[in-house]
Image (cartoon, rainbow, N blue to C red; front, side):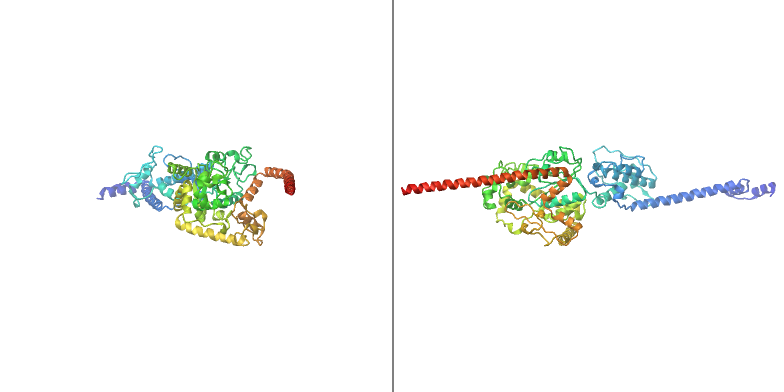
Length: 591
């Protein structure tokens, strides 16, 4: 079209200003640039719409966030239940993978604390990206945890971007009740600690108390440690106890003074507890536990087992001793501590206190507070199966790890029924033990409710008993315990002491070698198992002890023969004197 005609067409048309501009643009030589500009604007609009829709989808996804935490994500987080993480002060520019890798190099005591914060921080970052805001941290003074506030006031623990977002009515409607990702995830982390993230504990101290089924627990710890190739804090010089009843000292453990053992995992032999000295042997992250028994039942068992001690030796029965307790009991005489507040004594406290003492309540409260401070868990003998399930959860072990057969248990006829008022006499005589037991019998059930739950406890106790019955059917010849006279293998006979008859077991002869090894560990008595572990852990020292015993045997035999000859000679001299004296008397009478 000629230029004069084009100008005439534009000026003659009575159109609007917008239409006129479009026509001029289309008719100009640079109309292609206008087309590209229009397309660019359209693309920006489409991109903005898509981005808005994506942001909306992200918010919706975060609102319905469900995170499954397992041990591949959080690297042994068992201790994070006891630590408080501060999200606001731990933000940096490193990636999640880098931080998780570096977290593996932390000590055991720090496991869980760093990993929690890393995961929580990255969830917050995702949340901030979705909301299109930058995180500005609100500082909180160290050690001052803000109280929860009512109404719409922002929580000072949250990053400011999340505080603003919680008050915003955004793309997905109301978000006032939308949980902070950190707090929401932390709740899921805490609930997962007893399952997938639970890390089995291997540093353990068990205070082995007397006549409380503690020998059975010792066997459980021995079997677990041996199967995991752990190191035991065993008594010096191949002893069976850590020099009980002396207060424990670190030098009582084989390998401490010589420094031949770098790390001890389990300490569980009899000792009188002394925390500062135990801490010299065991690592800082050690788990401490013990077991208590009702002092009424325990006193009856102790009287039968330790009948030969001076305090009991003159009493024909337990009631006779209790009626004359302070007359027969002398605390300065060796082994008499078994007769009075033996639980308090084992825990390291003074056991010589009367029920009517003015400070009995104060001393009981101090003992209870000390036990709660030093021990993570106290079990109860009367609820042994429940105690094993609770121990399983506390140690993060498997059900197979806490299965057992009763060891060092008495034959049933040796149990003597107590008179009606005997129980009250025992409670009064062992007033300190009775108060300690009452407290921890109550706290035991609080532990059950908080760590396991009643319904789950019932299920797992049933599973434990089924497993024990199955093992008894597999391992034991007679399906249960037998008198020591009926035990075929002399190596499996339990130590007999006092007037109690301690039962043992016979292995089923029709089992394969691997099963036999497993079953034999279940029924090996304490003294034999301790010697076995000592030989494994200190083979050279064990060999020296054996050689020393062999060298001493002829001397003992010689001394025994000499003693027998001396006794025979003395008896012959006595008979000669008797005959001479009798003969002289007869001569005198005859004269």
